[in-house]
Amino acid sequence: MSAGLATRIVEGGRPTPYAAEVLAVVDRIPRGKVMSYGDVAEFVGRGTGRTVGAVMSRYGHEVPWHRVVQASGGPNPASPEEALRRLRRDRTPMRGDRVDMRLARWDGRGR
DNA sequence: AGCCTGACAGATA
DNA sequence: GTATCTGCCAGGC
Image (tube, rainbow, N blue to C red; front, side, top):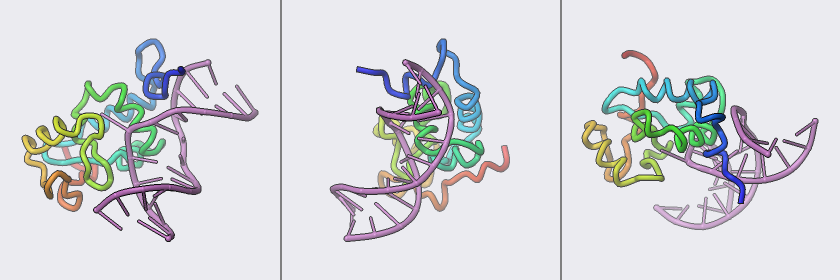
């Protein structure tokens, strides 16, 4: 069985330049705001939601990972319960178990 | 250089 | 609301 991208995206345990850019953006998302995987890719200027997800699966623990959500507002699929707790703690605008993207989406400005 | 794998997203039924 | 399908692209092999 071969390792997936999530475990292969790094080399020598160090983030690739792309991974570092993704992490830098995620690290700046303010409390109460979120970005979708696709939003992060767009903001970084390369990659797609999939590649951002690959970075998050390997390095999520180093940043406010719960603030990266699905475009639908759905929480992090790896730890949805914990993600929801943290989002509520952040006072993120929610609609049930989904983030209200209209109110909570961060445009990358400020901070 | 080519193939493969994804913590995605939009379109469609 | 759900289920499929298709395009996407970085990175490891």
